[in-house]
Image 1 (cartoon, rainbow, N blue to C red):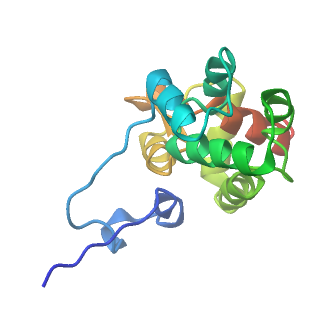
Image 2 (cartoon, helix red, strand yellow; image 1 turned 60 degrees about the vertical axis):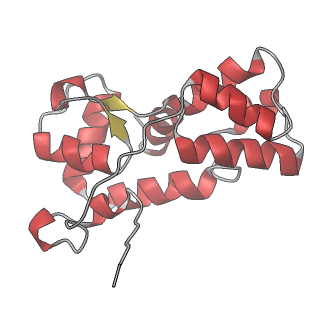
Length: 167
């Protein structure tokens, strides 16, 4: 019998004790963010809703985060949205990424220590806890090789959380 379990990165926000997690068995596969070239290729596969210099502008907002890249391109095609509107509304709670961003903010609001770590990073202070860094990085919110190099995975997350947390 072969059993495969797949789960999103958000599970790490819900689990404070890794030793009690049902997800700590098996082989961990980490998906890297898309490069600008890969985003450009995916844009072509979606029929090129982004034209010319719009691809790097799009990349600056979502920074290659796979879910955001794919979802944004899909919605641009199905809603016939254009890049100026995308840039203007990307962090809006009532637009393409609203549900995803609200879920991140809701989960963080339940974890006061993680919320404080996010506030510290937004205000330019380093991540003080390796455990907090690991949980936020495993959840896909942060990137970096250590807590001292912690940064938001994409500008969209930083902008939304800054506005949502009133910082």
